Length: 207
Image (tube, rainbow, N blue to C red; front, side, top):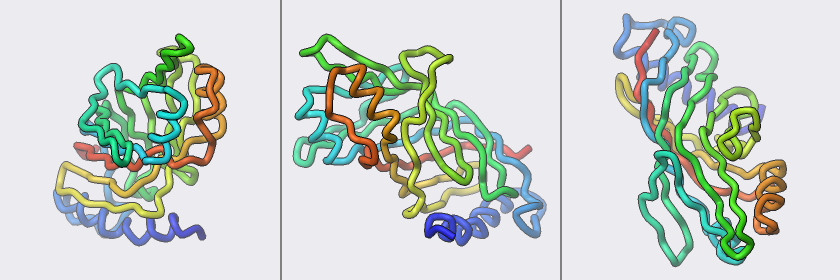
């Protein structure tokens, strides 16, 4: 079993206890009802590696559609961006598998080439292969697996009605790197690059 899976299993008991604190004393994960996500935010912090690549490629990442730039640093080059959580659901009985849907996204702009591409409406799919699926250029018919999600450093916290998932890494897929490079006439993006770390805070009710 992969390290990420082992760590995830080790944390599930603590989260079931946390979620069950507001319910009628569930005996185990199977007794916990599904969590309906009602809102929240995901905060991402880009890595210096991707910051340097974007600078070298003369590419600007611009938050759009409700995503917000929280801060930016020059040494090292990082940006902190908040993405609103729009909804979704998680199943404690299945090791918190499910989907966390977001609004907002990122528009990558290369002014020197008069090119841009937008990825938005991120859906975090939590299953055996955690990943982030995004809509391309606001066309719901065109979606791409933007990131795989590295859960090896996963932390879980929160309180009744709120769940905090931290320590995750967003790793750019080759498919996404190829699309971004093609759209921007660039070579800045490389599949397998850790794009950002993320912390997701969700508000939920139990169904």
